[in-house]
Length: 188
Image (cartoon, rainbow, N blue to C red; front, side, top):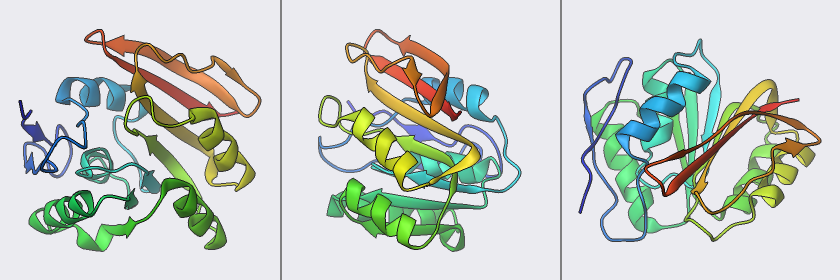
């Protein structure tokens, strides 16, 4: 079943997003997206955002719609990259985006080399496939998070992400629909 995905609020409100064809990505549902942005936004005054396992680009595009100045989209799947480009083009926001086909860890190092710092980082990888702590530690080590930055992690509700981390404060941990877990951290 393909969920229709839309932009929930902001400049692009109500616009339909194309989903990545095939089964390889699992889009964040509109209900979860709405709940998440109420916590982390709901609107932004500029800033740079990183959508690390971007899929269709839905989370990053939502952030742009709500006022983020720019988003860097990263995914390693060609179909996802193609879909992101299609969505950006149909919303005419290509100038607010950079899209990279890359491994997530490599992308973090590339961003650090450029001296980028993000106000908002989305970690929404395939469930059960990544070590979130490793990513959080890399983000800290590479100084990629802005002093007031937020990291959003979406995961299987059976995966427990730590409530405490040396460099982050837990803002919210919740389950949606029994299967989706979200954990949101703020820079400590």
